[in-house]
Length: 538
Image (cartoon, rainbow, N blue to C red; front, side):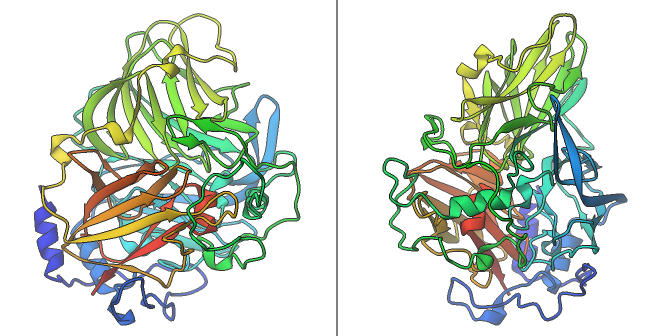
């Protein structure tokens, strides 16, 4: 395995010629402050920024490989959700999800995004250990891609797996701006006949005048003293969000303009899930989708009886965990968040926002529902697997497998080939998850997101992140630019559910220098302040 070599080389401070920062039309990164004071005690100038030579050195270890070129356009467009429902939203091209990007591990991905939206945007490559200046976080690793501008994302793709991409700009992810990214393994060990990429989503944009920005504005006012409706109570002391300037908390330096309040209330009250430890979510969505379709007119996937199908399941939702089952079948889980696991049998799979699970299934003869239950919200998304005759399942179908053995990423064990080498952490960083629905003041350690504050790490270290959930709400936490290991030989992941009142420790090797986000992947919690930055020290 190459990991010890990379840790040794990076720890010794290998210098290589950086490729520089590819910029948006608004110009270069020169003048951007990448080295402001951080959460630690290190001097401001000691942090490695995205345009530092160390970023180029790390990239040189990954490639370069053959170029795979793509063009993508972010546009405002009507989207057909099926069942006679058409909404106007933002998307990549005119498809929902956006067109799949597929490359092979070892390739260099070169994708140019043209921004035809009325606001600035970006692309974050969720789950990839890529070069820091391509990570797609405006105000931290790149400038905004302004309306009418474009940006070429170019980086080596070193590890196979199931990934996806979406903006890191305000709450844009909760529109139609997302698409799957599949990195094929040139030495694929699994044998199967077909692949089915399944993208789950919760949908609100364009329905009865609703937008994600309006939903955030409603949530940010909090529930105040509404008895019995508190999702948390950490006592963080950060105060009510109402009346605060939220621009400093945005995933970008330039938020989408908030429209005038429109549409019905989307604040969800009373949704509960034992699997999620209590409250299921903040937003009551009017629709839940699989591959952009409502249950009234679902996607149909065709196969032959006896086919072995690889399911690549991605939760692209904004506020919803999904429990997924294929009627009449058991699934064999093979990967989570792109990395192989010891094969595990399951009736149903649970995915928090941002998580991915791969599974194999040998399919029978007939027509079968693939149902994604919006966990705790009593609604479902639907797709159909057809291998033979039979009537298509209805929107109300609930496969019995949903109530069987449920497997999630926290229960899986890493395959031996990707287990993290044993070793004690050189550094531990504690993130206390704080906030409540009453004040909607979600944060880490009681402090809202400030891109100038960094939690220091150093190349070559084994780093432990300790997430302590002081709230009574579950949170899917995501680390950019790295894959960590769960305890006791647990799975390699980049996104994990942290249950209310619980602690989750994860370890990773600091082998990818730069400035990296850590955040809750509930888009409304993140945009309200539950984000932080890890900064590599020079």
